Image (cartoon, rainbow, N blue to C red):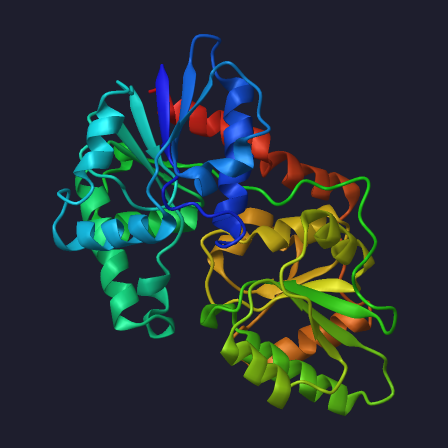
Amino acid sequence: MRIGIALFQFFPGRIGGVAEYIERLIPGLLKVMAADDELVLCGNRENLAPFDSLADSRLKRVPFSWSKRWIQCLRLADLILPGSPSSPFSRRLNALKLDVFFCPQQSIFPRGVRARTVVAVMDFLHYRCPDQLSVWQRWTRRRKEEHFTRVCDHAISISAATQADLQSYYKMPAEKCSVVHLAGRAVQTTVAPNPVPPGAPYIYFPAAAFPHKNHSRLLEAFRRYRESHPDTAARLLLSGQTSPRMEQLLRYQAAAGDVLHLGFVSSAEVAAIYAGSQGVIIPTLFEGFGMPVIEGLGYGRPVCCSDLPVFHELVGDAVRYFDPQSIESIQSAIADLFAARVAVPDAVRTAEILERLNWDRCAAETYAVLSK
């Protein structure tokens, strides 16, 4: 079986959990593939670079010379003139005689590949939180989804909550849908030096500065907590992609010196940050999955997170929930973390969660869908 994977929309380090998913999935597939299978990675040099170190005779790389900017232009044109602008891509891919074409980023690009097509579905943020995206973002997302739900052979959703949305918004037949859970970063036994400067205890929220991540309420809740606990040493640590809006929030809502934003950090540094934290807080308004919840538990940290169906699906009662729309509720969770009032699940419960939500299982279940 020849499995093609479309990496044209994959730019490592820039798309959060989706990048982690792709970088973990490809070596995982090589572990479970049959000896006579082939895994064909398709993309430009930047797309393919993270997999240069993988040495496996079954792994083929098909580099395309188009730049990131040119690919983005073609993707845009493809929304307006479906299939025509990307036809040079599809002709070259069809020459590879793929058996299955896997698109891991909620759209089929390029269109027109003559193979069984499987699409990974991440979330429906534009339906659940439409005010968090522009009119243009909502239109492009829906346009891509209208296409893949009409023509794909199978859709893999990263959670049952996402699958429920897929079937609700696009009436996808149950027989064309599967749920394959993601995981968090693998727990590292050796970690880098903690990049957090020495000082007061801290709680941690790793997330890109997207509006639905709810940084504004978190920062306001932390400011109020500090005002009500002036004699308690406490810090809030943030990491991930920042934005002008985030910089403004940090200037006007955070207590001086009590909030640190480290920007992008390496996986080894993330492990050190988790391990040194007082706990993990996740106030997001919506998620298709939610890797930090799994990661926090994996490092034995107490976790407080938004009361969302997907988190109940993933970890049940292993975390403390709060209302992400309420600053008071977030403030209460912050106070509980610093006062050590949030229980950490026992080792057996944590092991069960990590066994159920791990990258090896994700790869094996994905391969089973691709092999149908």
